[in-house]
Image (cartoon, rainbow over all chains, first blue to last red; front, side):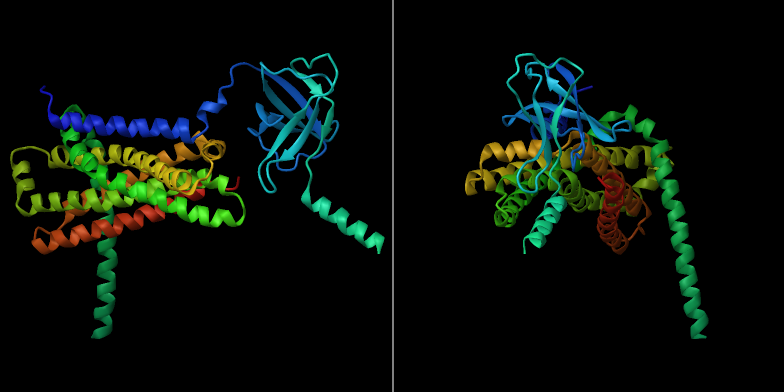
Length: 152
Length: 262
């Protein structure tokens, strides 16, 4: 079969289309950010996780260090159990604080890790003991109204 | 009697519509049945890919660029009020990848390539080329219709992806280069919110469905058109109207399935 100029144009078209899909996947989408090199698992219990979702980011000092892999309700403690996978490069001390924070006023929720002063490090599959739950706006407003009514 | 006459017209129209639906379904199944033959003669599909895909490139690229630029401008104007201009990247990318890319690319394809397909096949029928093929024991569906169908199904997703990429580029040009939104937050917010499976893959699925719908409608209207000049022109109009409506209705149905409650 002979090659023609038509084949070249069609080939260019198909290659450009597939390249556009790759650009969408890597540059626009977050396919490239999923594969963190090596990870280890940590767990934490929160009394209220607010709007935290799986795949939410875990940050320390604003740097992305891991992702939330799963959220379940622990029926023994009746608290939310959050599974996290953390990049192997980052190790945290035993008395690290895990806080559920919000990016911006109405943004997505993420977990912020604030390291403590202890020298011993958290090992894989350990539980972060010190946690702070999400701030629920309705509760805050409720408290504010209550204290107002009390004060007057 | 005027009443019986009116009833008769309504009845005959309803019967006609059902008849046509059945014929269209049989036509669609015939295309799928004879696809094997046209894949064995792949050069026929390549030829149609050129005339429907490559020739639509310019309009798709230019339209995508300008849609992205408009999104950049309008999005900036609105987001500025809430002080969240940095979300411009995710606004532009999400609206393009989820909706505008597949829908507008398919609409442009329907009016640029779908109408041409209908006119071509309608004219082939009017000048009795189709009957001549049947006379020579060449199946016109395997030789003429099926290659065009697959060329359309292949080109619409590729065109939609190119449309989205050009749109994101247009949004980048207006938002970052001209207005001065921070480039880092533009891209990082975009990558944070656009999910590969949930957004990009669903967009591709949408455009494949639109490709099937548009080309099937265009080919059926051409094949079914009355073999007159008036008939061909009417069929071409019907192709554009019906495939545009089909795209928008299918888009609603697919969106309802894909993005429900999360």
